[in-house]
Amino acid sequence: MRVLAGSLFISVLAIGGCSPGEPAPEVDVFDLAAALPRAEILRETTRIDLGTGDARRLLGFGWWVNDEVATGLKDTFVWGVDTESALTFFVVSPRALPVKLRGRLPERMGEELTVQVAVNRRPVGEVRLRSGLHSYTVTLPADSLLEGENLLELRYETASAGRGVLRRRNVELKVAWHEIWFDPSTEALEPRVRNGALVVPPRVRLDYHLRLPAGSSLEIEGVRTRADQGGLEVRLDRGSGGPVQLIHVQGGTAEAAFELGGERTEIARLRLLGVVDPGGGSGDAIVVDGARLILPRPAAASPPTNRASPDVQAAHAAPSEPNIIVYLIDTLRADQLGAYGDDPSQTPHTDGFAARATVFENSVAQSSFTRSSVASLLTSLWPLAHGTLGSRSRLAEEALTLPELLQDTGYRTAGLVANGTVAAAFGFGQGFDEY
Image 1: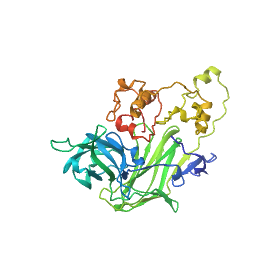
Image 2 (image 1 turned 135 degrees about the vertical axis):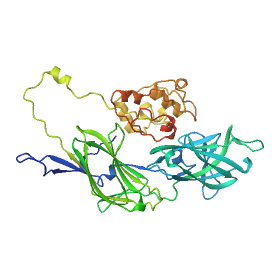
Image 3 (image 1 turned 90 degrees about the horizontal axis):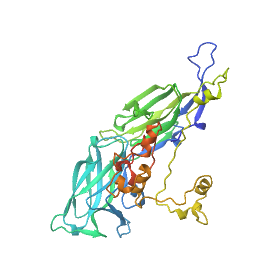
Image 4 (image 1 turned 45 degrees about the vertical axis):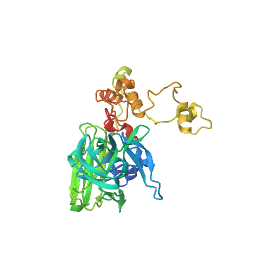
């Protein structure tokens, strides 16, 4: 988690609310537009070009290797195999979401194939695939979607008697999927700063990770949007109890000011969400003027008149629990690191860290399969014990993970992953406040 600080703050003096003779408290002004380069930008999944390397991180179980049509257009695809294929996609604002699937049914398999579409394990519709390459559309109901990561499953009809079966290395190939579009009628835009104002497009979420002193407040001079442009939501997430909505603007203009409360300094996240108009509007961006946080500086502590004994000082010392980071690199061979003998070394920064740390020379992964190995790392169980063994498996809710143990002792936990094999849909979000 990043805490924003430093040059983006402007030091000022508050000039109101003080009694005569009292010094004005100093505050820091945090400008959200100026801080945009440091915000975490989360975009909805718009198009997945299947068969490319970028798409693999979103694919779960039920897929074959990447492939491409032998034409000058280099039309890539990936085979959906066996009984179902699954992938993950990100949604900022749940709503009725049209999805366009483009795929090819091999001629030898017959004239048609029914594919059931399920979202987050719930069936929501089906498409009837014809022989050849075609596009198909299905709408995902709003109540089937989650804000954040979702699981899309394509469940294939069982082959009937007389239908041809296409196999490769004992894997049954069902559909050559070329691409998937989510809400294809809405253009994806980028957040930006225009004339000092923050511009937030629909289908985008901005997360500002902040250290909020007690007495902090949020001020917004204006939010400009038309009724057909969607809207803006502002939320504050302190970790416990989930995010609290501060403002929702849908059409017209608005200004707002909020006391964020809190009796002590807290790590929190401020979210700005570009909400898509449920009626299917133009998708233009929302303009936010003068969005800033007012952050009081803590008063300087007076020096103690009577210093406590060392025993009393130790009893009231700040908690000593360290921050814990597990940095995991998938499918990296040890002999490609200088710390394990690669010469010349290609990893000077890792080698420098190893020189100051403990290096384990006989550490063995519990499985050659990523999902199974990571499950062992998080649970301290053998693969046969946690049961996460195949491409369709998921880590059981009953499994006790390291993040859950840390939560129980008061830690705040977050997981950042770039591999769909260990997505939350497969049970790996257990114990994480954010995943």
